[in-house]
Image (cartoon, rainbow, N blue to C red; front, side):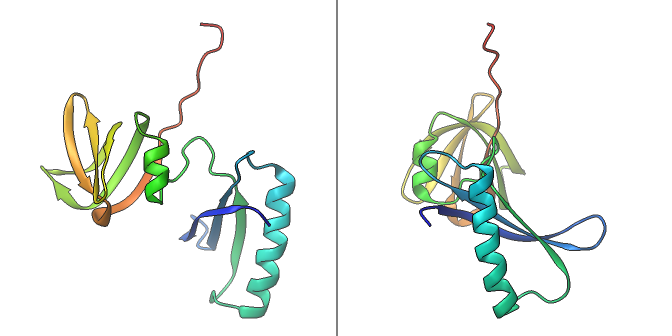
Length: 139
């Protein structure tokens, strides 16, 4: 279909129902019709394979402003951007980091948080996202 599968996650909602979220991307961006096509295809496969116990809602969307960073090339592409990273273990007393993605190495990244650099291994990242920033075009 020509889309990149960014992330698939199964989460619970406040009502107790599960939500299967599928994030897709493409070089020219994602449009509503793209999400509908992928949703139709994924739904057909899920109906046959039935991998999820109980009821769930399928959501297919673009990555949005807070796009997940999953692959090494995602981190490289968004170097010098503002990111939010949550780690599995504590690094110097913290697990949540919001700052500028300063360096991207083979095994880790360096995030500058208020002038303090933190080296975070890819293997310890629980979740990484861009921090969406809307620019004021009138400025």
